[in-house]
Length: 591
Image (tube, rainbow, N blue to C red):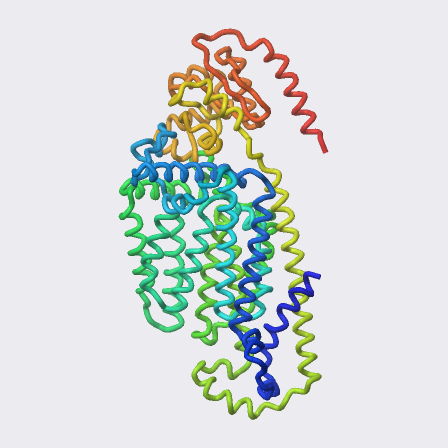
C-alpha cells in the first residue's frame, strides 16, 4: 500500500521528465487544471506531504515516552535553564541569571558560560506549557522536524528528481540520527543553519553568511561546521573555476568572531571553547571518563546503525562525474563535506546526527548530475542548450505511445523497488528507535528523591552526586541545592584535576573509606546516588565504612548522610548485601 502511494506521487514527477515531442501538442486545459499540474504546484504538494510525513514520524517517536527524550538527561537542564531565563526577563533583568549549581567546576558562579544562549532563548515559549516536560518534548519534535525538512527542501529547491524517494532515504538514513534528533538539544539547529549556509553558497550569496554564522555561534558551538562548509566550498571553486573564492570563508570567519566577541559571556566563552576542543579533539583516550557520545562506534555497530547512509555514500562515490567541472560543483561539495562528517562520526558518536542527512544529499545531487549528464548534449552550457532545444526537438523521432508507456512502467518499477527497500529500512529504524526511546527512564525518575532533598536538606547545601550525568535531572527537580559535578566531567577536571581524580576514585568504589574525604574535600555531608550497578561498589563501601546513614531510598535512587563520627554499619546492611547479590545473580541469569 505504501509503495503504491509513493509510486502514485512519483508518477507526475516522472511524467515531467519525459521529453516526448507529442506532449507539446497537447492543448492547455482549464486554468485551474493547469495550475494544479504546474511545477510550482507539484513542488508545493511534495513539500506539504514531506512536512506532514516528517512531523508525524518525529511526533510519534518523541511521544513514545512521557519523559524528556532520551539517551542522556541534558534536555532537563536546557528546558529548566530556559525557564529561569524567562523568569529573569520577566523581572526586567535582561542579563542572564547567575549560575550557582556547579561551584567546584569550570561552570562556577564567576566562570559560567551558556554556550547555547540563543537556543535557550528559542526554548522560552515552550516553557509556557503547564507541564514543563511536555513543552520540552514539543520543542524537540518541532526542531527535529524542521531540521529534516530543511534537507528535504534543498532537494526540492534544486529540482532533484524522485524527491519523495529521497525523503524516504533521509528518514531511513540512520537510527541514531532519529534518536539523537529527538533530544531536547541544539543539534537540529546546527543542521538548519548548515543547510541554510549551503543554499547561500550554492546561490553565491556570500554576505548573508555573516549574520547566519553570528546567530549560529550564539546558538551552539558547532558553528565550526559552517566554517568547514565554507572552506570546502572555497576548495571546490578553486578546482572547478580555477580561482580563489575568499569571500564565503571571510564572511563566515568574521561572523564567528563577532558571535564569540559580542557575547555576554566574553571572554570566558573563548576559554570554554578552547577547553572543549583541547579535551575532546584527541586521537587518544580521554583524561577522564566523558559522555558516551564522545567515544567511537564499534565498526559493526556503526554499519548496522547507518547502513542506508553508508549505501548512499557508496552510490555517490560510484556515480560521481567530475568531467564537467561546472556541473560537478555541488556533488563535489557534498562529497568533501559528507566524507569529513563520516570520518568525524567514526571517531565521535556525537556527529551521528550530521553525517546521515548529508550523505543522502551527496547521493541525491551526485545521481542527479549523473542522470543529467548521460546525454551528450547536456554537457553543453545551459544557455547553449536552451538555444539548441527547438532544433534538437525537431530532429528527434516521435516516441510511440507504447514506448512511452513502457518507459513509464519501467520508471514506476524502479521507484516502487526503491520505495519498498527504503520503506522497510525506515520501518526498522523507526521501530527500534521508538523501542529504545520507550525503554528510557520515566518522567518521574529521581523526582521522589529530589523532593525528599528539597524538604529535608537545607537550601544551598552541596550534594555529592555520584554520577555527573545525573545533574540535569537533579537541577530540574531540585534547584535548591548545588552539586559536585555535572553536564560534562571535564568541567571538574579542568577546574581542579586533583579533586576530579578523587571524585572518580570515590564514585567507582576504589576508595574504601569515602566519608571523611567527601566531607572534608568536597564540603558536604549529603550524597545522592542512583541505584544502578555502576555505583554498587561505592554504595557498599560507604555503608560498610560506618560513616554513612541511608536516609532515603526508592527504586531509582538513594540519599546518604555522613555521620559526625564513625560508627557501626546499618544493621540491615549485611542482609541487604546478600539480597542484592542474589538479585544481581538472578538478573544476570535471566534470558
